[in-house]
Amino acid sequence: MDHVLMSWREIMGETRTMKVISLRSLSYAAIFTIAFVAVGRAEESKTDSIPKQQLQAKLLYCKTCHGVSAQGFRGAFPIPRLAGQQPEYIKNQLRAFIEGRRKNAVMFRVAHVLTPSMINALTAEFKELNPKPVGGAPKQLVAAGKAIFENGVPSADVPPCASCHGADAKGNGEFPRLAGQLDDYIINELTNWGKYRGQNPAKPDTSAIMAPIAHELTKPQVEAVAAYLSYLQ
Image (tube, rainbow, N blue to C red):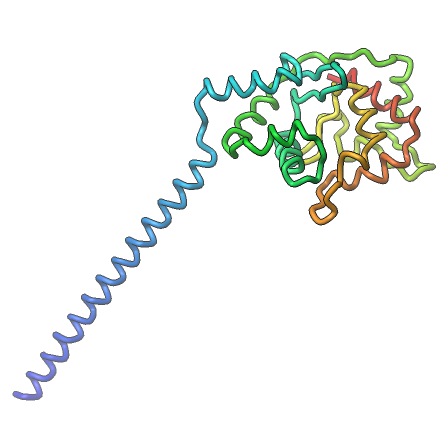
């Protein structure tokens, strides 16, 4: 009888233990579920759409400098086209302004106040814009520029621009769209590459591969490529 009672007690003890373990497992599961939902909401908050009015106000602010359709603007100095630009490229450049990899006091002030949600919204809007190029470059340079874009300059070890920027010059990911870009902006960037970009060697990015290319291209070659690209749609 004692043996039977002991067995019963052991069974009841195991049952209680199983209930405790089960409750603990349930508690852990609840904790993990809550944590998972919290993380999911946090991630979702980063990509949530922002109020349309707020987005339009920021777009209007950007277009004050970059043109009414973000097609670029020639003022005291050329301001680049953002229309049709690759979102990943713009995001990378905004980080570059903040981190000091690219020097521009105005863009530093603009970039460091933008939230991830706003950046996602802005870059998506710019990608969908497709105004006609501003143009204005010397058309007699277009043929020479096309040859360099498609074939590079083998004698100077300069690869075809199309190998990274695409045959249509519309870019891909972190490689920017060049089609329709202001020619004087391209000329200014290429001839002054070392002054504006790659200013933080501890944090290099994809733009670093342009340094030797920009250095090897002669001024007439730069002007030709810029003229060709400025007319592409």
